[in-house]
Length: 508
Image (tube, rainbow, N blue to C red):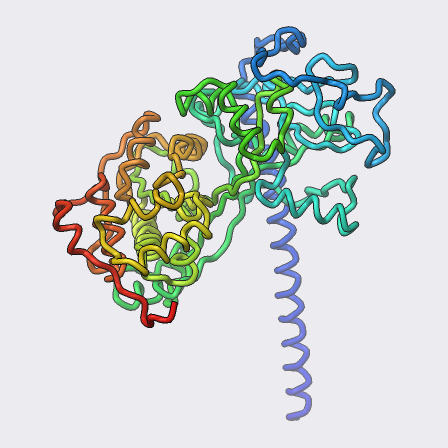
């Protein structure tokens, strides 16, 4: 009898296990279908939002391209392209150094930046693949700073140069937009607002014309685990709700948006108050002449720069980010690998980041929206090498708050290269029209956001108890320079008395 019961139990367990497995497979299939439906729905929304009576915009004649006469090259022979049909081979024996508007075989796909109709606006096309190189309407390469690794993979034959991506099941994990800001060329100049839908919006270009079009934005869902958040739950600052804060370990549900930069050069130049020709020339000359088409192709207005992008972390309902009727808590954070990842206490970066995440979650749990935007701008966009040189100069001298910015300027020639003018673009893309609680003290971020027409109702400084002792040099110097505070702004004499920790040994 016992043996029969054991056999029966084994059969029941096997059946339950099979049901669980089947349910997982079914859930995965449903999720994949939902992804495709969401992508198609987003594409339909964009097309429906476009004016139905808009006439097809024709490509401007080559002669109408914006002149860059003062930047024109001395000779054109090095960039000549053969007139025969594009080769089907992945590479040619001839190296194409640059191209020119009106050159035989050059036929860029129309790009009307800011047009409401995605088909009238056109896709971002930057690939130099054999079937695409003559249709390019953008300079640079996909992948930002990782484009160099792409080139290396091709060089060592780890990646086929004519590889065609399969975007099955890669659709955005959450719907977004469209918003009026997407078709305002003044509000979005540093990213492609259609970048998350490109392969589906422009599938006919890909399938029928063999044009390589890639997404510059991806949207996914994930969990986030940080040790400080477990402590937040334990101390009662975060509440487990099973939806956003999932358990006692402080694990969070989050929607993530990865964004690669796409610059609309006339708009970028306008943001910085310079002319487009000056911007193009500086980008060309100060990257070792890496992008000659910045000079020779005044008709191409898009540039995919080899720099880091950004990631958006949204807590709660994605749709609430753009809802003016609910509160939004936001932290805009610039990368600091030493503190954010490895816990250095020379700055307030990780403590402020964790505080921002915690406050964003609290706002979402109250029925609002919580957002953290993480930019790849290591060391104030000066880079980690420069940052460590500054650390050395500070620690080998007397590390005083009064000398904080001078140390950086002596080495880099400038105290900060993050230049927040382009930062608000992602807020426009998310549909954000106001910020109720800004979890930042930066006057530069505040002024850039408000300058783009997004009001900030309240600014929240980092609590004093979260500031590491060695980072008082940084934070007190920044407050003196204009950072927001609800406390005291020190005089230069008082800043001289604020000193950081010396190295633990003298053998340096």
